[in-house]
Image 1 (cartoon, rainbow, N blue to C red):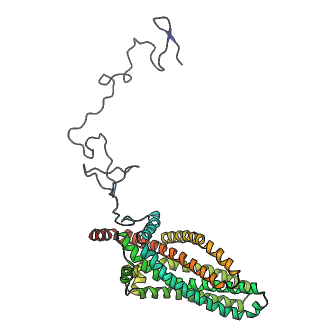
Image 2: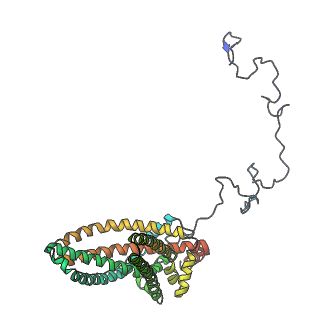
Image 3: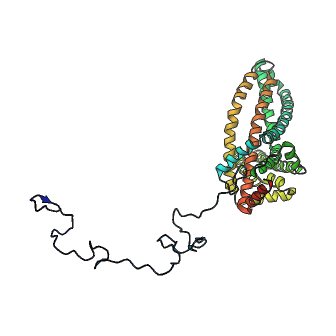
Length: 401
């Protein structure tokens, strides 16, 4: 704290803290002395000639070049490694739906929408043709099987009133139709995915295919896709049958508790195994179609592409399936309500099945088209990351322009 001192006019004045109250005293060396006066620390003289690592026009000495970094092109100095100092890279070329560089999650999801928008005739048209054929055949087979089951449960149905018996038969028909459709789509899914991948691959470089061109480009490769689908479905059914037989054997020869525990463990193991195999073979259709590999080579190629990227592929594919599941539920709600209402009316069970089949055709068309786009972009992304496919795609886009 300072004390006021009288000024010449008689009023109080204030001195700065730490200042000498006696203005006639000489200042202490090194404090308050103008530059160039004795006692003031002088800056070092600039060196003669250019300073290595010094950017012209900037008085900043740059740090040494860290390992793996590129020096400044102007001076041969390094790029600073601190926060906010990043090497500038030119923007990636984007002739089509996605940039030609490693893709992010949002770019894959958005690129899949762009793939459908860029060529809806092939993505929806080809999907609709295959899906409608599959669902029509499945509905007929499901109705035939449901009639056989209804005849087997005729005694039980005879104990019900007319309305309940009709509702029971309609429920069996709907359930069997859905089951047969699911099995048929499990076989047709990889084939349709392979067909649609051709359109998505061309959309990446800004080209469009007609439906006839997409069909022609897969000539000689559709049989391999169908063989792959049959091999996967057959392997899954064999494993499921073996586990079921093991549980039944334990139930007959051992305790019920052991059979239940084994059944639960087998179910969990089966789901994990099927999920792992499905992700590891996710890119096999793309390899068979786009690279034209033989059957065995295509499976090995797809398996190797997914090596080391299981969790990324699994996460993106699972997120896509969940998103499409929500969309499918929303689309099927009106059809389900209408089918349930028609099922309660006399002589309307066939109409109810038709409504259900049309709803399933629409949702399966949208689902397969989008899933195929995601798989195709995952294939492109992995090959860009590992094999530099972006260079070949940019060259192909330039030649086609």
